[in-house]
Length: 452
Image (cartoon, rainbow, N blue to C red):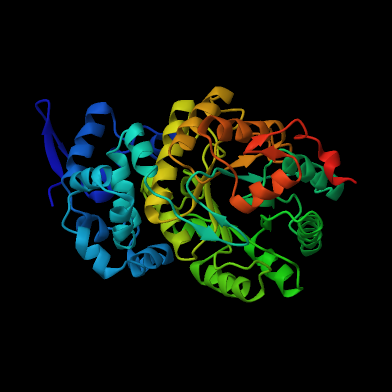
């Protein structure tokens, strides 16, 4: 394994694979803050050259956090299928990029289970934005909870009816409005202000009662801590999806209050007590930079740590995974350009991992980004068949205080791409007169439909 190269008459040498991965990453403010980014464009290109000539086996044998020290590394490495790995282990990272660009979806699917997160991160660093769009568009991962997400020709949405005080009347008003715009086929999912069993239970019951009364084919979820959800389940609360934020290292997951062992337990409890019908009943959110904020990145770059989140998520066969791409702020993604790049990277890595991948296309108000950046990224992701987006009133979350995609944005993206919601949901929206041939009618946007 060669860790040096000569470029423009200058020699570049790197101490290990972790440094090569970090310095070959596209510029991110988080990597700069961590002190691991390339010094300049020339060093970044040199690192990419060295990375391109490594084999995938080199990357598997050198995880950025040692196997013996980290339960995430163990989960990823132990999940590798040896037969699939044997098919690709001798490829260089550069050759793997060419393979992905040239291959069909079936050929890519054949090697999914032979990949580790470091391999996926490595090839991502060699791809242009168009490469990421082109290859991600080939990959479709279907998952079934109450309904099936990820079918070709669909563009799904999470209805996010957040409320600053968890007031049930306000939550349900936003829910009714969102459904009246054809939003919520992926899930009706609330970020709670109060992480208590009683509050979680009340919201889940309200969602389920509404779904049953109006025959809305979707899933309910409250994005509380997994231990709170487990406690609610023990009380018989109807829960279709169980949620948890994930990080790419044991140390950072500890900051979230979880371990792989706890998530294994939560998965088994949910499998036994869930109110949904299908085999996929977990929901995970991630985002580049979380490991740096919790001092658990182990000197690795934020893209590689993000890829490891997806490797861990795969263990639980989720129904939904999404990166909250610009939520953490400018310390990690400084501006709209970095946010757009990260969103394309995350979506591609999630799909290549084998996940039904969505993106919360978002930014915080102290970033150098604006609504045009959100729309640009959303259009690019819609072009490569991103599984789902967020739907929030006005694109402005009144509880989390960040900007993302609105009910109207989802309708526009569907119209531009000719895509529709999940089939059963779309059919019900047409029965209610909200959609006609996948497009909003004049009746759309009127929540009084549901107050009769």
